[in-house]
Length: 452
Image (cartoon, rainbow, N blue to C red):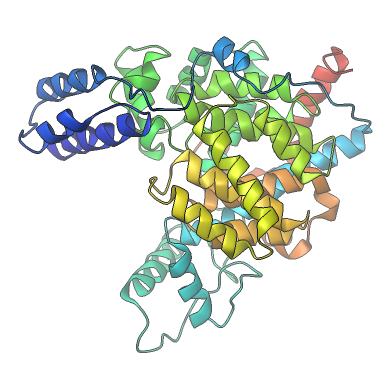
């Protein structure tokens, strides 16, 4: 790692420990006085941080061990009755894949932008509120902000070099995105290891199929730790201040697709995946989403889906508190922007790719969608932050609820049933083929009477 990376890990670790409820005041002050230049100096600093005490006033209980997570749940997760023919089950799984791809692609051009920046783009294009894939802008007004010119220039350059378009009129497939890479990876894991895969099996699959430079934040830290000989759960904690960021939450979908109506199984599979790179709320984000996707096969009641997701995670966690707040705010305000203001006020201090603030936007998008796919993905993306991840998650849940046949063609047809991927052996896959393979895994579980 570079000197710059050493310093960034130190700064990010201080913030992470503080968010976890530790009193880092003294160590944080020391960081301003020292100049970390070597890995040895960084290790000494991190060891000092680990000795910081938990604040007595910290009101949350957030374990990272599965048995302790289960003990802290608000209630027992129950299997849900589903009566779907093979054709219906495939349609729902295919709907999840398509819904995820389209939602991800919608948010991809504006990833990392704020709500205000997204509104600026759309207002300049004369297309606010969002109702379609993001438009290119060919004639900028004189007062157009520099960041918008730079973002569109970057997107156009990428399109010329890769032929993977992300703007309206340029889309011919699902452009490569890590959100989709992990959905593919997890299908590969199930096909090769079955339900009894281990967290280390996940790590080994990453090393074989994913290029290091195409994984980010917590995943890159875990990948580095694997290469250096560490094993889970240490892969998630050693020099990894990103262990509660969104990386695990975006890996949730396959587990829900193959466990229709069984949120307990979906959440346990998600746990084995998440614990390679995450702890606490980072793990909960993946368990929460996988359980919601599983529930979406059995009910179209969005509040019920969210409640089932909450039943998979500790009741006294920061994530649970955030989701419950969003549910309450959605009942108070008819306009999603009012709820967004409350989310930003309460959780805007988190990094733009943190689990908690982005999960709040996912729930906001679901609640204000009313079950409408377009409303769900556009509202979640217009909220800003990790837009491609949030659009993908909302699109996946609503896609499962509705099924492929009921998804609006204007969102699905531009994909041409094809996706690009950096997962070795999967580039230019047909989305329908991946859905068929996912269906087969789910069907095999049904044959083994896992579901009743």
